[in-house]
Figure 1 (tube, rainbow, N blue to C red):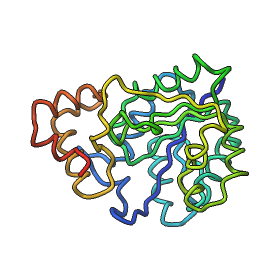
Figure 2: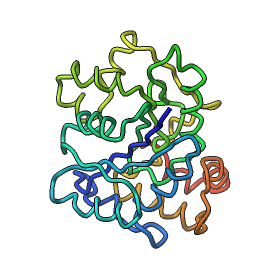
Figure 3: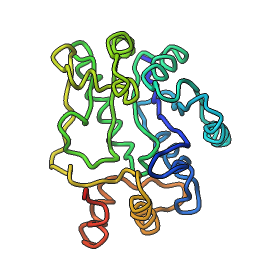
Figure 4: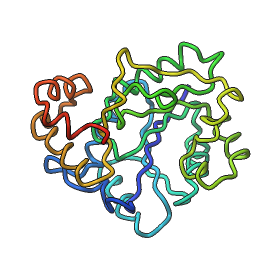
Length: 238
């Protein structure tokens, strides 16, 4: 089974333009995300999926500098981008993440893939996004390519196409889904970079935990936040 981890990225952002290339601990955010995705043991290939829009040339160029596969597709119709990338790389399984999550834990992704593999005969989709128990910024979806293609046929609303899986999440009884739940509820935490405040929070975490060549995980961040309530408040959903 060929498992392709496809990470969507774009330079444009309404709240924080260019965020995927903002520096964190001396490197672009995209570089840290790619390092983390490469540490996923269960994935066979990591692909950065960006758009054909010329503004995203810089994202594609950086991914190539980082020696990562790049696929380009529609800017707004991200669902079609995923379907096309899945076909291009002949994926037997697609793992979806976003590149605005520089604290994404490879272990979280691996466990989602393992949950799918354990139940592969009875499951089409595994995700921790249906009932939120992980921090924002730890989101992962594992999905059969044939289900992506079905969503491509059924999803008509622009919102459903931009965010890839809303049709599935809105119609879970139409698909064989499996929820990936954390042992404790951490849904009140936000580790995704959407705003400058989010970026400042992540930078502070990296300044305290990052060591070149090593990956710190979700448990390391949680210990840091437990010991530093003021920092924890910055990483909470407001």
